[in-house]
Image 1 (tube, rainbow, N blue to C red):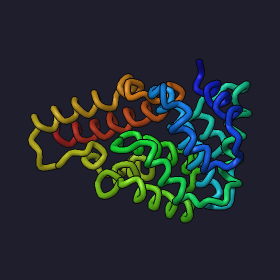
Image 2: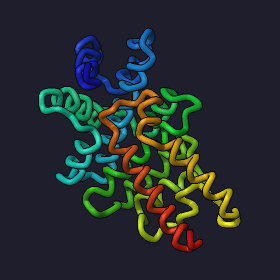
Image 3: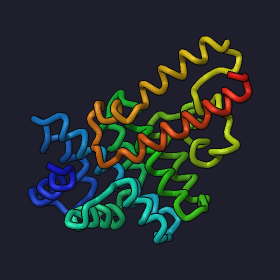
Image 4: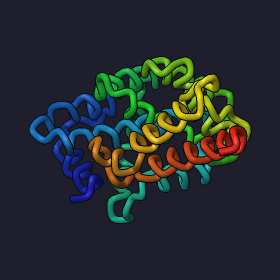
Length: 232
């Protein structure tokens, strides 16, 4: 069954119209099905924070909508359910900080999944070719709430904002003082951890494969830069 069909069933069973309550309900409604709960939780998190980010700069562009749909790969027949959630989030009086805290609580001790959410948000934000100042403040604060900081956040930021000129060692989560053997071993480990199949094994929806593919592309691009530098 499609994750969007599950979302539709989930919505039809809710008595509330407030999005904050929707996030909380994910915990209990799918308590007996951990895999579905993770998929629905990830979908709801992306929809909620995407809507709040669009509201941050006051403009929802056509490019942002297309980027949103590129990540989500939503069938036409299911788009009404996603639109309902998206509009609920945009209209909810709760601030994005409250949403970010609730999302973090959905994925305790799971930084990789929270990084996937951040990657999706950056992808949408850059869709119109311009990062707005308000969007960057939004990103910084969400990352802070998620506990993503230092080199971890820098790696995500560089991947999207400076894909060509970013430091390849930061993107690879590596140290330039490492010798060739250690660096190659680390790269193989990084590829294994970020392969799209591993992404799916973590229980995230297959509809979000674009995020996993994008991560692998940036890892390989950074590795190519390092390989040229070191003469591999």
